[in-house]
Structures are given as C-alpha cells and as structure tokens.
Length: 615
Ligand SMILES: CCCCCCCCCCCCCCCCCCCCC/C=C/C(=O)SCCNC(=O)CCNC(=O)[C@H](O)C(C)(C)COP(=O)(O)OP(=O)(O)OC[C@H]1O[C@@H](n2cnc3c(N)ncnc32)[C@H](O)[C@@H]1OP(=O)(O)O
Ligand SMILES: Cc1cc2nc3c(=O)[nH]c(=O)nc-3n(C[C@H](O)[C@H](O)[C@H](O)COP(=O)(O)OP(=O)(O)OC[C@H]3O[C@@H](n4cnc5c(N)ncnc54)[C@H](O)[C@@H]3O)c2cc1C
Image (cartoon, rainbow, N blue to C red; front, side):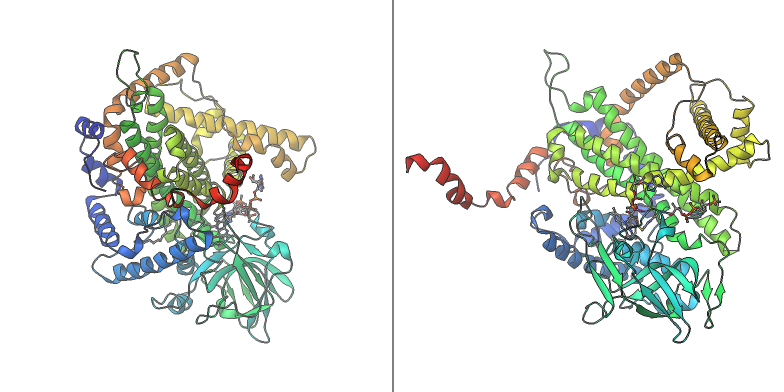
C-alpha cells in the first residue's frame, strides 16, 4: 500500500536519541546476521505464491491447511536451496531472527515445523551414526513428526502406554496401542502431512519393561500417502490457535518395524535381545530439553512483534486530552500506557539475552555429554524447565496486555495480536506444562536447600542458600546489584518455606510424594522474602516512573530496531508507515460479507419476519 508515513511516527523517529541500526545488529548477534536475515527476507518475499489475496481467517479449516501445506513445501524447497546455495544457513536453531519470515508467510504455523524443528533434530541427536547416514539424506522421502503425548498422558510421560515389544524371532519391534487412552494425540503434522514419525513407547524385551524409548515408524505409504496396514491416523480438529499445524492422532495395531529403527546412539537393543543401558536414563528426553531452550528465544521474538504493533499504534492513535483545553494526545503519552508497553519491550530483550545464554549453555553441556560427562545435565534441565515456564507465561500475559493496550482495534484479527496470543499461550502448555516444569525446578532447589540445612558443602551457585541461613544477606540496595541480591533472598526464603512445609508434612506421617503434593503451591509461587522496606518500594516506584519518561522519546526507535517487516507483522495497527485507519478500511473491504450490497439472508430470513404484517 502506497502513501505517506503518518506524521506522528515521522516525529517520533526524529526524536530517537540512539542509532537504531546499531541496536538491530546487537539483536541479530552481529551485523553479518542482519545482512543474512535481510537477504533471506528479500529472497522469500519475492516468491509470489507465498502471499495470499484472501486473508486466511476467511478460509475453512480444510482450506487453511491446504493453503499452508502448499506454502510449506515452497518454503522447504527454498530451505534446501539456501542450504546448498550462496546463502548458507548452517544452524537453523541459532536464536536470531533468520527464520522469522515464516510467521508472515503462514500467519499461523508452518505444518512442517515439527518435521524441521523436532524430527530432524531428534534423529541428529539420538540416532547412531549409521542411522543418521540412512535417515538424514537430503532427498529423503520421509516427512516426519515427534509423537509422544497420548490421550491419557502428556505431562507424566512415564505413564505412556504405547508399547514396543521386541520379537527376536523376526528381529522386529511390535508397536501397539493397547487401549483408547494410549492413542497418540497432538503431534504437529501428524494429521495429514507426515508419512513417518518418531514414537515414544515403553520398550519390552522378554517380558521386562525398560521404560521409554524412541522408535522411527513409517505410517503412510511414501507413494500413495495411504495409512499403512495396522495404522489408524487422522487430524484432531480445530484449536484455539495452531490451526495450520494439522495436529493428529495415531494408533498402532501390532505394527512391526525393524529392530534397527530404535534410535540407538545412547542405548541399544542387540540382535539377541540384550539391552545396553544409556549412560543417563534421561538422555531420551533430550529433544524436550533442546526445544525448551529454543522456545525462550522464540518467545522473545513473539514479544518483539507484539510490542512493535502496540507501540506504533499508540504513537499514531490520539484519544483524550490530558488537560481539558489541550488537543487530544497520542495514547503513548499516558504513563499507564507506557507501563503496559515498555515492559514488553524490556522483557523481549531479557528473554532474548537469556535465550542466547541458554543456547550456549546447551551447546557446552551437550559437548560434555558427548565426552561422557553428565555432571551439568541436572542444572541445565532445572534452568530450562524454569525459564521455559516463566518465559511462556510472561510472553502470553504481555502479548495479551499489548492487545488490550490497543483497545477495540486490538480485538480485530487484522491487528494480528489475537493470533500472536493464541500462538504464545500454547507454549505455556506444550513441551512441558507450566506448573509441572516449575515443580521440576523446585525439586532441584529443594535438593540443595537440604544440603544447606544439613550444613553440607554446596556448589558455588548455591552459596547464597548458606548466606541466607547464616543471615549474611546485605540490607536492600536500590541498584541493579541490590535487586539481584534481593532476588537471591526471595529464592532462598521461598525454598526454605517450602522445604519447612515439606518437612512438617513428613513429620506428621505423610509419605514424601504426598507431602510434596501438599507443599506444591508454595513450591511454585514466589513471595517477598528480601529485606526490602516500604520506603525502598516507593523509591523504586518513582525511579521506575522516571525511567518510563526517559524511554518515551525512544519508544518507536526501540521497536523499529526489532526490524520486523510489515509482511511478518501482518498487522493493520503496526505497519511501519502507521497508516492505521486506511489499512483497517482496506482489510474490512476484503470481508466476503461486503461482496453483496444486500446479503441473500435478508431475503431468506430477515424480510419474511420484518415485513410479515406489511406483505
Ligand atoms: C526460511 C524460512 C524457513 C522456515 C522454516 C521453519 C523451520 C523452523 C525451525 C525451528 C525453529 C524452532 C522454533 C521453536 C518453536 C517450537 C515450536 C514447537 C511447537 C510445538 C511442539 C510441541 C511438542 C510437544 O509438546 S512434545 C511433548 C512434550 N512433553 C513434555 O514436555 C512432557 C513433560 N513431562 C516431562 O518432561 C516429564 O514427565 C517430567 C520431567 C515432568 C517428569 O519425568 P519423570 O521421568 O517422571 O522424571 P522424575 O521422576 O520427575 O524425575 C527423575 C529425574 O530425572 C530428571 N529429569 C527429568 N527430565 C529430565 C531431562 N529432560 N533432562 C535431564 N534430567 C531430567 C529429574 O530432574 C529427576 O532428577 P533427580 O531429582 O535427580 O532424580
Ligand atoms: C499446540 C500444541 C502442540 C502440541 N504438539 C505436540 C507434539 O508435536 N508432540 C507431542 O507429543 N505433544 C504435543 N503437544 C502435547 C503437549 O506436550 C501436552 O499437552 C503437554 O505436555 C501437557 O500435558 P497434558 O495435556 O497431559 O496436561 P495435563 O498434565 O493433563 O495438565 C492438566 C493440569 O494438571 C496439572 N498437573 C498435571 N500433572 C501435575 C503434577 N504432577 N503436579 C501438579 N500439577 C499437575 C497441570 O499443571 C495442569 O494444570 C502439543 C500440545 C499443544 C497444546
């Protein structure tokens, strides 16, 4: 859409006091990455078949999927070209915005997300060298997904009921779904797209259960795409979001696969049925760990999208004067509006930095694991659980806050904020439900509190537990370092309170698991345990208000620095030129309900009633 840039946005950009490009390079982890991202954006944005004439909200459930799958295979082809062409993408999970363009292409979810993001990466991480050589061929016919959750079990994965029983007479595993609750349910791409999958199942050899293992199973014919005999597969139906992801269900009726289809890098079943244990029995859960780490960066990116839309809109939107004799003000001038929006910008940066840090930690710990050293895995798991849980919860709350900050127009699908919310809130549940993951971190913290309470040696990371016990905490200091000390005090105080409740429940004769369950609200909630006083809180509050005023002139510059193209933002409210009302009117004109001046329902249903006595 042509036209002039909104005057208020032009003024905002003039006011900016820092170099926007420099911040973009920092966000992208270097100018080189910015250049690479822009090259990819330009390359893909020129593919006409990827762009819709009709907004996808007007398509049926079936049409949406068909449209998305058409685009997904164009994107897959591009991905392969990029891998072999001039623009090299060597590490598709590097937490930069290189892959962000797909948010615009799909306005929803790429149906091949799990194929690319989980299927390939699980094979790369958990299959033996020979298996990888066979399965990771660039021209492979396999379109795969990651099949773990069942109708009856998602969080408690030890409860998974699908079985893989070794038959040594034929050298095969028999995959079986013993009952309705054991049907796989949820995997992305399973409904219609995938012809293969990685299945999490309980391994049985000679009547002994060895727990959960991952198996590669073909489920549809590579040529006809019909389900193979013994496979019942389909799509689960419409959801709050993720509607182009064809999440599916799957049941096995004694479906046989070769023994060599179990992922055998860390664990093996030999021809005679001998079971060779892994070095650590949670290595099978590695894909969840990696995805939790990746998600932190992805959620930071979703926050930057929501902030860009809401800040630009708030600079363009004028409503109410502050003083009655003044003109109406930009809504961004209201301090309460700044509070809603600037925290979203800040949180995006926080989770971007933390996501990068976690990414590097994951790389380091994985390298250690390759060398046989599992020592850092528990800490990484505890951190990934906590950070995935809070980043998804914060992101969905803040995206919703941005939507509300756009008033009624934020409720329009054309603002794209409802879609960003639906996408973001799903992350609170998938890859480990919020509370369940926080309890994993609590379990880790309580273990170290016990050591502290028993005056046993603690790792350096937990020295602050000892400080808390010895009352070595400093008085509150109103500074970044002081705030960190305050948080340490809160963690220590909260862990102590939960631990004490746990001990009290145990003394009262409860078994450990029961006592844990009773303490679980305390184990997941945070309270104020620091030495902060009422005066300190008031001082912090006024410092915060001063900072809002300092950020205000740079607000548009800060979101411009996220450098998210209009084609990715997909928002009438958030486009770079700020022509909000023109875009809204143009989008409304696409509604099929505006095609006829008088809709035919008038003649069928309305007129017979309203004109009844007059005919
Ligand atoms: C150019 C354009 C191109 C475009 C191309 C696009 C390509 C895109 C590329 C990709 C980009 C990625 C972007 C990211 C977006 C991703 C979107 C994803 C979409 C959605 C997919 C969703 C998938 C799923 O949801 S899969 C299913 C996930 N399920 C879960 O997470 C289940 C949660 N439950 C559990 O994990 C477990 O049951 C648990 C941990 C709660 C309990 O397990 P347990 O066995 O019962 O263990 P427990 O007894 O409690 O503890 C024992 C012991 O083990 C430790 N432990 C547990 N887990 C782990 C672990 N993972 N690692 C290490 N240790 C672990 C635990 O701490 C205990 O220790 P101790 O206390 O010492 O005993
Ligand atoms: C959009 C989307 C995409 C998905 N994609 C995939 C996929 O590709 N592959 C796949 O395998 N799965 C997928 N899933 C499934 C997802 O991983 C599970 O839904 C998720 O792990 C939560 O499990 P659940 O549904 O069993 O929830 P439940 O565990 O039944 O949770 C219900 C409630 O019970 C509480 N609860 C459960 N256990 C405990 C406990 N021990 N202590 C305290 N509270 C507890 C929870 O906190 C929650 O409040 C997807 C889900 C969604 C929504």
